[in-house]
Length: 456
Figure (cartoon, rainbow, N blue to C red):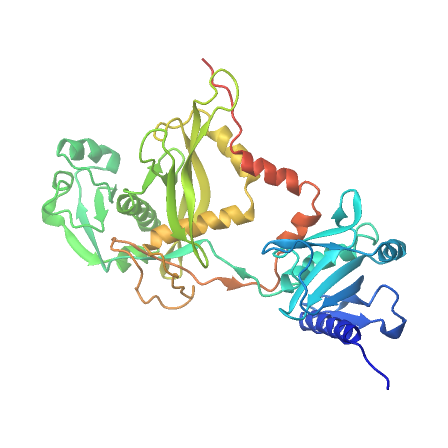
């Protein structure tokens, strides 16, 4: 009787799984059939936006196992030793070759270019379970392999679609009423000395053209000396917030900034020189960690970081203190106001005094920033401003009517915005893999700010 062995079934099953996976992701897998001699098939990549075939291909060898663990397997990865006869054959191919490993017991599927061997060991591949999983995110990396043996200047469009883009905006919810009054002072600068003599310490107000504006009722407070109390009037916030008058728009922007500084004064400091908010230090030369929720899970960040000298006579002494911060920008879109958050950093000598070389330190740090770190800082400040607890944050449609429900007990409410789904994804992980400077750039990020000797 004719027989089909388990190995034959497993091999055919692996190829079928790979074919289904590739085609479900919008690309074409062609099998070699019975004449296979070290390559089971090819993947040709297709532009997901237009449906056009790119003519860029990789050759695929599928290796299937039922349930056996791979060599040195752990939760992070494993090793795989290729046959020397296969390696020698793949070196002669005109197409780049990738090996795909399929395990039936857990339906796992991993891939690796056969050229990505351990230096000095031409048969050994090291698999990273997170980076080398064969899924939608892997298509850009596979496509990058497809042009390694192609012509100079070859191009393949992004292979993924539907990536969410998180807008760096938060909708601002304001009180229904705003207080206006006449003032004997032409500007806030003129009024501040009088307020300080009256032991006033709240600055969530604006005086412009002898008109006082605030979300807080000034009557019965230390603000009375800088206004004409008899002229205080509560009006609908919309009269100023929705006004087309340029002066009203300037007043609203400054009032939002001042009110925000007052509301979050226990956590953030506002720098008039840098026009940024940044995390306060709790004590001199002391780091500070802040716990928050990112997209899916609770995490934390060192929002105040102390950097010592690493060399020279002052080794071990504090060189600089870095604070997470952001540059705020208030924008009116339609009839609603939004806060734009641009993450940045502040540098101080000891946690409080501005650093003499803050601009140079910031410039060095900005050159090392990557999209992931900037995105993480945005989520950090979004969590803080929304007043959220350590639970999944609600999202709102940017163009939907505001329901007025936002977390926090402050005067202003900051509401999160629903991400926008883009037509195409940005394959950053694929670029990082192929960029020869990627390792160097990552190493520089981990080193911290560039240190400079202070003049005596």
